[in-house]
Image (cartoon, rainbow, N blue to C red; front, side, top):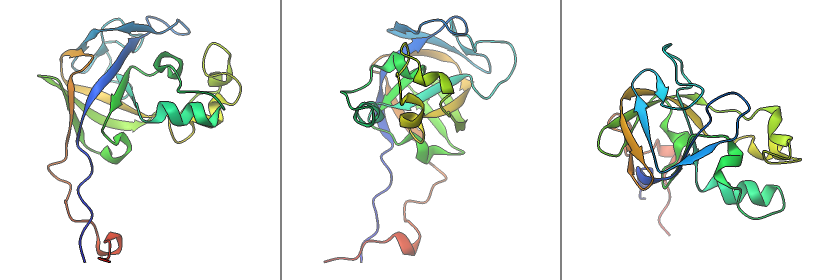
Length: 175
């Protein structure tokens, strides 16, 4: 009998976007300043209060799935209204953990990022968008350590307290 490998813990930033105010279109950026306990500079959630939704993240691998659910090709990142598209890391497996991005930034998973009903609007995902994003909306995070996030930056899940061996019921039997 062998055990499952640990979850994939490294990836990269595929896309960055902010929206300056509620309802405003997303602005794609090559880099953004992440301000500790405040949010992303230029984003509507950038504030002086310590909120749990300082950054929103979605897996890049979910964009083609969303498109398939909607009967079309991959969804453009800005249509999801999430700040960061991360490729190569299972974000949903990071509950109660931290995420290192680039040279300095550290985020802490703070919750699921549920879609809102506005995803059905044509300027978002269009009809069926809300249903397509259910279970694929990504996560929210707090900024613990600030710095600059750039497209292409490495992303590393900080899993120092997650056991690498799964519980026995998740083991894979050898052939």
